[in-house]
Image (cartoon, rainbow, N blue to C red; front, side, top):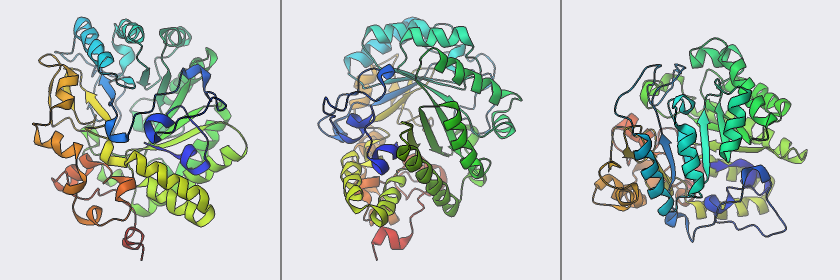
Length: 406
């Protein structure tokens, strides 16, 4: 996750401590008081406990073309029970993870979501909710706020019919927008999540206008990862030239928001190459800020400290994966061993490799001058395209001249 607002504009956000080891002084306060206290800073990025995304159910009321869990609106057997979920939460709290993300499927479909959320809050866990937003009426928004969710991420993949075609439901856009507005009306921090594809990237200017007009406080732009129903969507992914153009638009609007004091956080997700690209842009316009961004990005380590280190996934049946897109490899099941034990066990060769991946990287990654910033980016995308988790990430859009500095 690349905090564009922090790196490109220098504005503090609540995620700074775990992303960049940045400890804000008391004068900075909390830019988002409704989100709760800022994260604690770990000694180093490699020492981070993982942010855990728990897919609490697979069922979903939509049929998104890029769904990594290949979900449908039907019952899936074998999911963790309420009691098993509460035991999992206890272990995660004792393991001192920085945040627990409730995801799906559509998590609001699971009847005991708020029971699980209450238990997590009682154990002093920061909790976030990832949802398509279509089920958030006024009453549901109030329940979410009262449950103590620090943040709600609502997925949109374009404006109007573009989103509806992507999501497989007419009217999904309007229902999601109502969900956003209902959350904001009760003081719940809410943000937009959008996956960049050829279906929507040309609408980026309109999307940024929508963000401003709706008063949305945070937006995350995800790069496509080839998993689930998105596994054969390489044709829908942006070309390298299109990705660079999309990044230019994102940087342009982020800087504009910052200069006008709008306080909107913009992030990109699932392609750590965005860090070096942002750095190269700053080198041309603001060398001092570029040097600060380089320092923060190298502290973070990019992909080297992401999947299998600073981020993990638990699927609805309790299987533990390096991240939510890596469902084909399981390290163990929380019904058999605690997550904390599974996560620290490096007898699995993949887990051992992920925890020390830089010596294993091949091709352009191994010779890139930005390796400390990017960390080889997203390993599961390399696996999906080449069959080798240590091959270069095919979504790397830097040129040979940029990675060599020549």
